[in-house]
Length: 127
Image 1 (cartoon, one colour):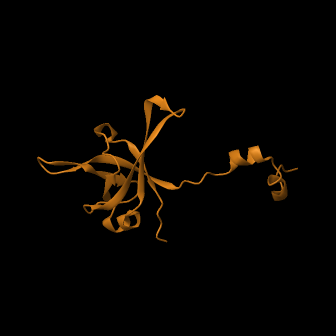
Image 2: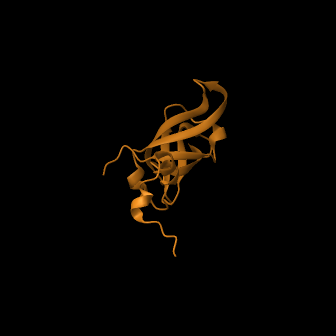
Image 3: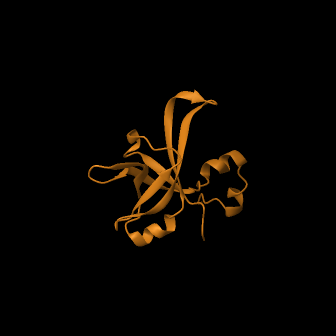
C-alpha cells in the first residue's frame, strides 16, 4: 500500500501548518554596497556604487533604474523596541558596463557599510 496523500487532504491542514510549508515571496533583489563614487583624489559621499546579484551587463541594469534601495543594519540601542534600522536610497544610473549601479541615499551611507548586503526593492515598478 502506498503512502501517497491525495491532493484534497493537503489543503485541509491547519492555517499554522500551511504558513510554515508555503514558500515565501521575496520582493527584493539582493545586492552589495561596494564604495563611494570617486576619482583619484575626490570622493562623492552622497553617491555609492552597488552590485546587484545576477546583473552583469548595462542592458540588465535598465530594469533597476529608479528602484528603491534599503541598507538594513542592527544598532546597539533599541528604538521602539527594535534594534534593526534601515537607510533608504534610490538607484540613479548605471556605473560602467559590467552591471554596477549608482545610488543616492537620503542620508550618506557610512563607510562601515562597504561590502555589506543591501536590498533592491522591486518597486516602483514600470511593468
